[in-house]
Image (tube, rainbow, N blue to C red; front, top):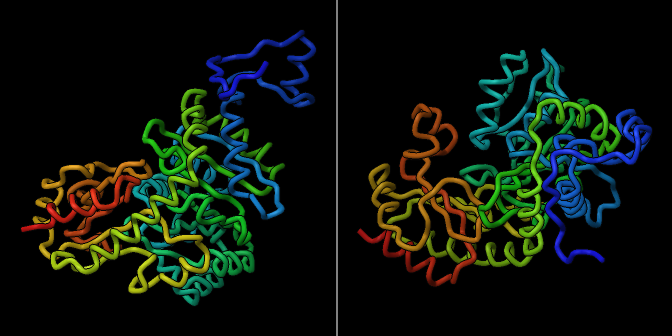
Length: 379
């Protein structure tokens, strides 16, 4: 008899039938569970589902390793594939945690980052040609919070020409909207906290790689040793969220396009950053590689910092919070929240103005969302 739902295996360790079986498992001669930091049946189920989503229709194999957070997955990726003296080539407008990792933590290991506007392929190729120390191309598209999109296919081709591995953060898009492996990317990472879970109930992350043997050996060893493993309960919640991914993303995306169109014509709004608007500089890049431009957008208010504060304070239904990916509409004001301590010139360089609002468009009734925005935008 089998349970309808995947069980939560709330066990830290597992029993061996005999001493010989324990020896076989520790030596790698037999697959099986030993200790939940090393693997757990509920966690395995979540890993396999996300691998299936990211590889569907591509005819390739991959392996996924579920982590305690997206940052744990990214840390495993960086520490498993880079060595002292190596460099990472990446672009503006990265997730804040990733930006902290590559600019403040990895330099302590003599691993440094080159950050440029990689939407210009000539700049990307020039950097790759000039610096053989660049060993990884790290992409995040759409990126946070200006919704910049880079061309995964063309950048991946360039990277392979110069013997670089390519990694892509696919959190904003999810595998329902975009499959980076389709463009010869080597690794994909997600913060499963976001749209894959979809309900804001658990923190998690996953690292997926096409080199299954490397993932099973070196990368698994580093993951286990660093200790950034997930747990059975969070994996169970993630599995429940994945079941509704398609229907949620369809509604998120429908609402996002309508909200973007509404905001673009509002007198209080200076600019809307949404990849589904032809006015967005990366509209055609998004159109090329994404099924739909997605649920995330940002917009600039004409009144600057105080207008951002006033708008956030007037919200009634939409939620004032950081993070994203839940069924609810979530809004944040980067200048007073996530990027408060970032120097002004750096914020401006990344397109983060004082009046910028980031918005995760939820799956609520569309008119309810627009009505709340309308009253909050009213002077």
